[in-house]
Image (tube, rainbow, N blue to C red; front, side):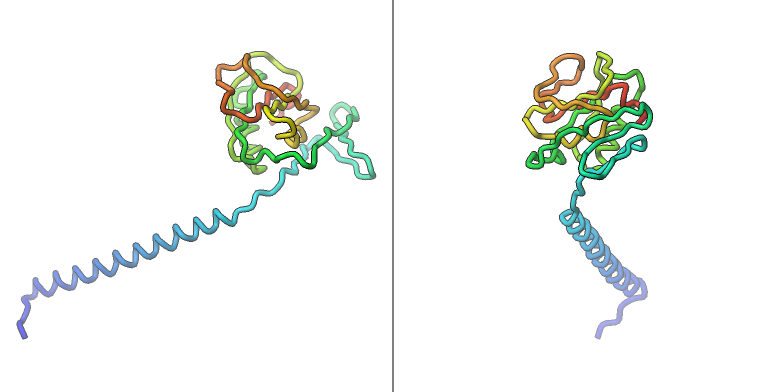
Length: 181
């Protein structure tokens, strides 16, 4: 048996230790990545059930929303139960108020509720009430419930914004009635 020098023995042991540590690191990273992939696939999106702090909903056979700030009672928006939810649709939120960052804050609120593709921009003409505009009938009707007295329309927005609306399925124009976000 051939004797190794002290330096040769040291480098041999150093190389073996480096290979073992590298192997452990690769296995650890693989496990972490696998766990993230599994966790992402099991993620379930909960339906949006947000009620603003100034809105009370009465039970008792009638769907009404009572706005404490005005004392006004209005009929809740009619939501098509068969409509396709807008969770994975491209949604453009336009700020028609003079409050900077309002559209971005509404995007964050919608993201928290499970709407994953929201984008913010500005709208040049001030609106009193919020408008939810969908390119497809019935898509996004549930979004009306997020806002105070919002309307739902089918159509497109071609003016009032410098952002092209071509790639968006739903456009929300935030009015001054929803500037409390």
